[in-house]
Image (cartoon, rainbow, N blue to C red; front, top):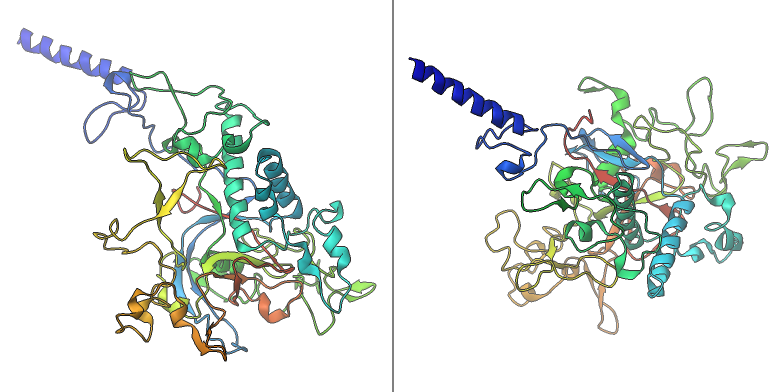
Length: 494
């Protein structure tokens, strides 16, 4: 009995020793300690993580809603048929991107890419969008983007491609400052060319920069390490919102619901079918910047209805129930989606989106991530048919025209010669002109949706469900954008 008692005590002592060495508990799958160099140093600190809200963002709690038309389709486009979908919780910019924000972006580009001036030229907004043949808009051409009086106004003249480049740049600057604030990196205002901080390049160990204090590595064979995605320090990408996300955020039905009952569907980001504020303190004031009637852009002197002849400062009007400003009026806003009239019938019920082009990192023969490009970014390529051959959820890289523009959805679905054609214009051909040249519609894989109505639009276009499209490399004086970010983890944002 004495020998048995000693054995039990010895086992308890060993268990206590193991427990004291562990700072994060043990694995329920293997019994090995977490965060313990003596057990290999695998790091896991429990269910503690909460995503930090990035600069300028507001949490939009997701849910299901009826996306699409809520009023008469006066144009008879039939391009927003109602359908119930679910949007995950995400973050969205409180306001449209301002002129000062975009000027900060251009300044950084010109300072860092000194040897590549074409990068700066490519990013410049088109200030000539203000010109009209029979209107004197030259002052806006010259002053709107750069004069400090317009610094807080939404940037316009930015096409869809430029807006995406801005989102990518913003991701890197925000993640860089997060690492600087934690002392992992030091401020480096002298970054040049491909040596600028890029989030993906950093994670792939292809960026050194001005190193501060790296994290202690619990791997017994190493001393320090770089930040990994598993550490939860770096934020997901800034990006354009999908059409479903944008419409959900604009309607903000959280303000008209109790429990799971939505008591009133909205047309606009506020309750009611009018544009005037119903509250006593602001009764009768216009809720959004738009055209009230033919030739009436701002009302009568001494009693201006919306206090803006063109755009207005981004905080000029009231936020909706999510805290988002100018989700109707001021400027239209780009969203991620490629335009198709029947998207509502085709896209998935969960996180609907049309525009996927699946890509993978370029790697060398040994499987390592290839060298960065001249701008310090990792290179991607579209996946090949061979790489997707065993997939059940997708079979090709470019899925933009899936079921609406691809070979299977065309009238030539049984024509073997047509099956070898590329692109989706076969779906939108309108015949040939007198010179036997093929004519197509304006719809293609490069037409992107914009929503929200603007200072130039009548009330109809302020409805959250209305949708229009424009080629992704074109811009207008009434189209701006705002960024979004994926929410990871708890959908309620606790």
